[in-house]
Amino acid sequence: MDDDVLVTRVIEVLAARCGWLWDPDGTRYAGTYPPGSTALFYGAVGTAPDQAVGVGFYNAADDYAGHAERWVQLHFRGARGDAAGADRLASAGFKALNKLSRVAGLNHAERTLVALLGADGNARQQRADSYLVIPDTEA
Image 1: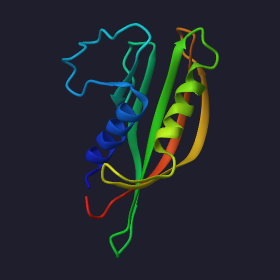
Image 2 (image 1 turned 180 degrees about the horizontal axis):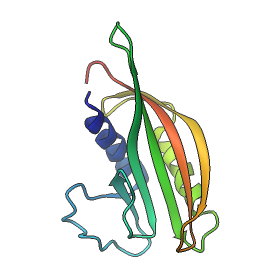
Image 3 (image 1 turned 120 degrees about the vertical axis):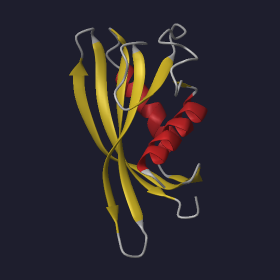
Image 4 (image 1 turned 90 degrees about the vertical axis):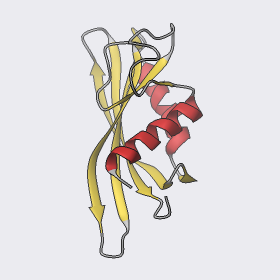
């Protein structure tokens, strides 16, 4: 599975299991999301909405037998002034992804690291969680 396909599959799982909004070509919402919604982004989060999750690829390991390991990072940003906003989003993401098995071409996923990032310039708390993802060799 190509890396961009893997990231897209992770985003699709989060959209389906968390109810977050995924607008891959930027035409459905055109940067204007419903109030209180959480948007998913491939890579860096956009400026709106306040609640957002960016998913990006950052590492890979492959062995001679075809076993593939990929690492993705989820960047969570909570609503303005909500001290626990990023943590709540990360908890939902954890419930959707951790110990995932044979879903959407992903054989396994588990969280490996959590990093608190603090607030951005708009008082939106941020956090980054890393996940090891093993693609399904049959996908």
